Length: 512
Image (tube, rainbow, N blue to C red; front, side):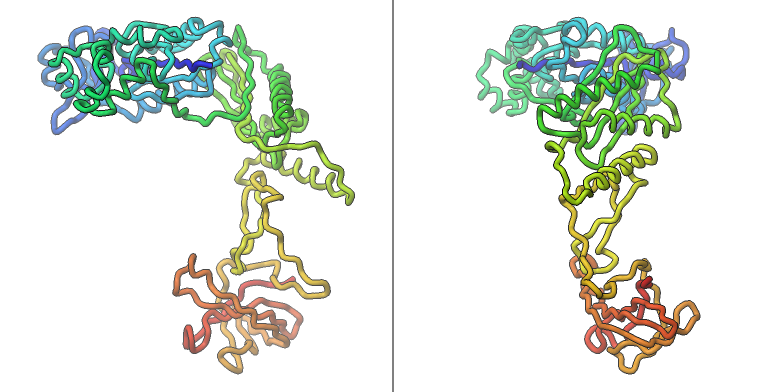
């Protein structure tokens, strides 16, 4: 399938942004935006009135005022312009999931295989134009077979749609300015009599590359449609996408769950044919006023069970602090499955634990849907001898049982090697020992003196020098029990005579 691209250019985006906010003054006065360049204020952007009066970007403010005294001058805000373009990119996500920024003040949409959903490329282009007009934005839109051809036609030409195979014919008449090369290069081309892309296309490419660089030749090939350079979308394309578009905005929120259930059923059939299940689901609600609301759902293991995912959807809806508001209605609803993993048929378990594991996984999914991914955690084992690094908390939804390290198994009839409660950081204690490298006889912790009746050890643990550096001391751990039967886990930091002359003692944990 030949790829198709829709390029959008907003020539007066900055000024129209200010007009929409009502902070640009009276509409009858020309509006310019200025920025400081080498100590002088220059025009960074102009509205349509200022352009019609002959003002252009780069002109100094003094020259502009000399030509047109009645100017509304506002300081440029590139960050606000970029935020508006990104918001427009989210709006265009309803037409295709592949939307890329095209600075300055432009977007490129990969509409390959999407146009028929809107009645064809012409109908899609008109619908995008109506959406932008409703927002009060001027847009030039062109469709071509490469992103560069579509961009050149929207910014430097007047061709709305270049049919497949017509890119070269449509772009040959464009000025060499469409290459958007440096001013010196454009002047050099003009002096050589090369004023259009057709003039350049008639010259040998190696001659142009030797004089103006390979970049100019590559750009020319792409504008003429000879080479397709794919766009990099703002959002990575999901593995599976299904969606519903409505001829009239949908305002009945009671029917949303039924539509979501149908989308889940369609996605489930697609995933089943591929032998996969989804680990993450994203439901996007596109409002007719341009607002986009997205709900994220996660499962602890691959799933295509419609009923189970619908339960997560209800949990997520009930936990929203800001409920779904259709406004003037939804134009489209999309279900994307950005994370897919292999999912085979269920296998019976002889020990009966499959039901328990499924119930725990379902509970974790519901908790994540209600409280969020970062608030539902679980411990997993780590490959480290350091006690504080043997386990780490991770989001429960991200846990994969087949990739996790096994937990150490205690020997039968042996006391636990590690306490249930660890102190982080270990707490310093005062001790008395018969010899510097022997077990303690007593220790003081939190102003209480404990007499040790039994001690077992040492268990020597070397430091992780690649993490802690060469200054970290070796630890000798002891399991000790006092006269009242309380058990503690103590360690001495530093080998006497080799690493330090005054080892320090710490309490690292309490046994049950």
